[in-house]
Length: 467
Image (tube, rainbow, N blue to C red):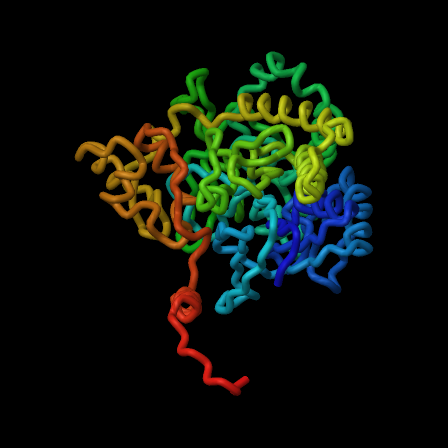
């Protein structure tokens, strides 16, 4: 299939870009791995379930308006397309995706331009017991509630750091779960220095605070989970207070009985496809200009892939990208005045996102307190002790640790364990460029090689008179 624009990711940024571009005559194909569009923020349960409360109240009007506009548009929406590679060609770009739940068949989508709206993924720092059944990520608990209307347990502790903990704790409480505590490692005394940048977030934060009070959820600030307990399943967690330097204060430990723990320490941008294309990164995020263009011709990026900042920022970036793409494909220079309101939202959103990132940093000395027998890499069962031994053997970066220990060589390719490895070693986490964005069946690769070989093979001359 051929289209003008392929948008990868059907979250807020992707949907906004699709609408902005299609309204200006661009043929758009929207691909996403999920069965439905909306992304994590606008995630909806399966058809037939009562989905009234799945989308946050302050986002329902936004979602309904964009859902209806997308349904009325000419956008070709393609769910359950798992993109594993984007190929640069002389005539444009080709998006390769695996189809359906089994992901055994690949399709190719040819486009003149591509927008990467690939979102982000959670950071979880390891601690003893974090591999027990009943321990889930904060985003995982939210996905269970939004997508399946189920909860991870009856008594849940929500812990870690970052703004995601608030909607997770209040959402679980509203669903009838007893939230034993919201455990936040950030010191609230740091908030005043960021108050001006976060002024626009105060009404939303006040709403979450009111709901926490209404559901009587205890809030423990400057605390962290140090151990999860249980044999076959989680039975409780030990939390402790942190000192000003981010170290656990001896004698402050307390046990919180629970059957589920939702834990998260912020998010990182999904940059796999951007890296395979050779896009420049700014830290962990895809670097873009004022039009959301990357430094690779024909490739734009928007949303969490360019920096974690929430739905409003993603919508603004997606709208700007869509209008820019429409103009560039027509061969004209975009008019920034046309998206000035979205640019103002983007500027405020990026300022607030930078403040939240500075405010919600994981404890500085987390890695020092992780015992040697704690599993760091779950795929390859690599312990903290093995990681530390690699450092004593001369490993000075996470890539060398990977080579010496296999940490990060498993199914997730380091997405889950890389922050933990970095914390234990004291090395800064570095993005890893991979040939493909996800595991691909060998049959798919072989079929692609055969097609290319057949195309390149000289063909015998056709006899005269034959068709």
